[in-house]
Image 1: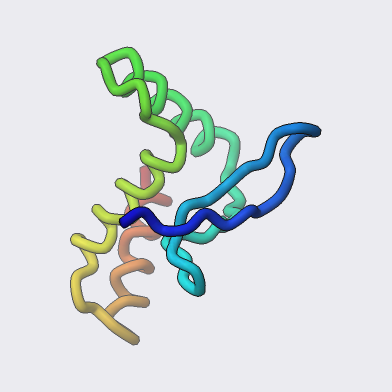
Image 2: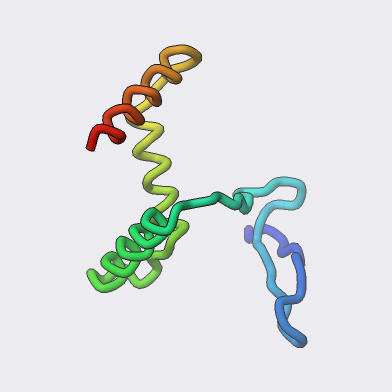
Length: 97
């Protein structure tokens, strides 16, 4: 059974944007993130390369979600001071480049 559509907002007169999700739950949320220009350009380059390689649905969100999944795999179950130490070590290595 297909979940009922919930009307979010009108994007243009005569068109209604809909999101299909179960009523009362959300499968995603929009998050604004600030990036430096080289980082944003890199994401655009990866997106374009994926599209040219035959992945027509590739977009910035796909690239960022994949990066998050890879970070989750890398960090594993680290918490607290171990997590802070891991981030500090990576930032220090990057500053030496």
